[in-house]
Image (cartoon, rainbow, N blue to C red):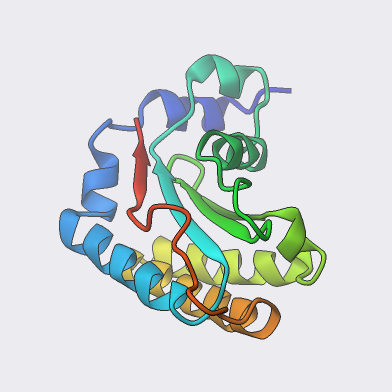
Length: 167
């Protein structure tokens, strides 16, 4: 069943909303945090922001979680040597954050741990503190990855560290 209020929030989400939440300076800080994070472990982080879903997708019931898994595949976060990719997906219209981890990490870190980090980020975002929420989420993910995927010699950077804005 379609929630009309959700559909309306996607239809009327201004296309520039991501610029307010994640201006260039914040995107730069996120990129730097990812770079620093990846020096400490062998995981690969991606950060993606999407304003809103296509109204027809919302009408048909596509959830933010389902869209996060699509973005995970589209950005090829799964395509790392150790299956150690992690996507942080932010859907502004739904005010939701989802963390999707590749199978190598999912074997060692429970979804409950990812959901707790996503909830921390959502709380900061609801207060309008997008920089702190993103950086704190990356910091907490880093702690998990250092424990389960310590850095290896050479530690190649397999995925871009630059945040992605999905338009």
